Length: 114
Image (cartoon, rainbow, N blue to C red):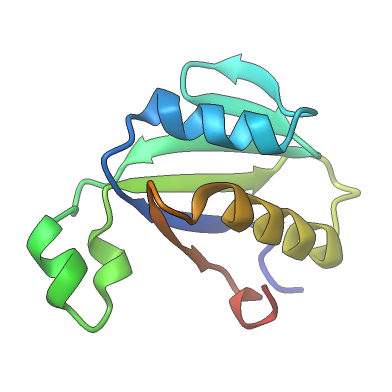
């Protein structure tokens, strides 16, 4: 069975709080969990600093997303969550984040279907 956990790498000037606000505006069912995290659709979503972030490489490297500023980590907490639900959630999160203020890339076993 493929992994249902996924990441969204995010780059832009947003703070973690601003990024979380974008997500909560798009997903009103997301419930605060602790700082920079929410419980959403059977998952724990956490926003973490990407320790390997490098603004120069984010633009110039072939795999620039690896150097984006933020890691949005989405981990299932409910055993009933399936791959179709994770794909739909990843799509919705991408729509919420990717835009004028930030760029975003999904990293997942199912990323080719997002």
